Amino acid sequence: MANSDGYYQHFPTPNESADTTRYPRNHVRYAAKLKPLEWLNALCGHKTRGPLSIERRALAAYDRAAPYDACLGTAEELRRLRGLIRIMTRGLDRNPYLLGIGRLLAKKLVVNRLNARCAVLNYLEANKAFIKAHGNLRAPLIITGLPRTGSTLLQRLMAEDTNARSPFTFEMETPLPPLATTRIHWLIPVSRRRTTS
Image (cartoon, rainbow, N blue to C red; front, side):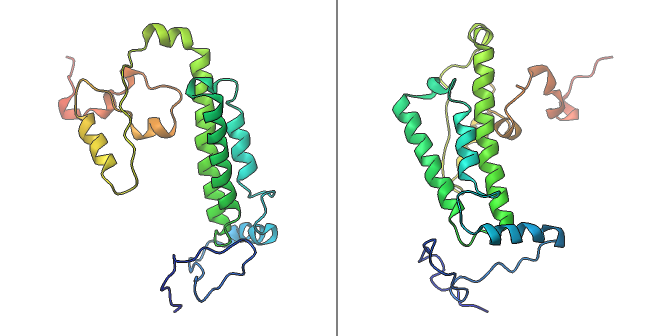
């Protein structure tokens, strides 16, 4: 068994060889059908241009929302956000310890979130008049926090307030199409539903 003391004390540079005694390889055995993914990952190395690279796809997904994202901030703020996305995705692309399956999942996660952002902005632009006339969102409260700090508990506690509307998890992951209020009756326990006779 490799000694993992100081496992997180050193982050290798892209040109540095992987020290498998200090950084033991993942011992998970994936299905044989995923083996080509690992070969592809090994073949492409840590390049920013390849079928598994994240940076180009993420920036393309971010740029697709450019015609409608002026409502989210100034041009300088949006440029800085794009720069941060580039730094994050380049770091993922150059990570020598990210396996093929991890690279694929990270790419899917980042690109899906940016595509959802674009879809929401497109929907807002297409339905701006209706939302302005019928929207009743006032002073939203946004809860953020690092994992395991109680942010989810706080969100759930505040969602108990009947005067507030807290988004469901699936709404945050897949915000479109919007959830109609008439379609949430299945969330109410059967014992509390009104029966019509």
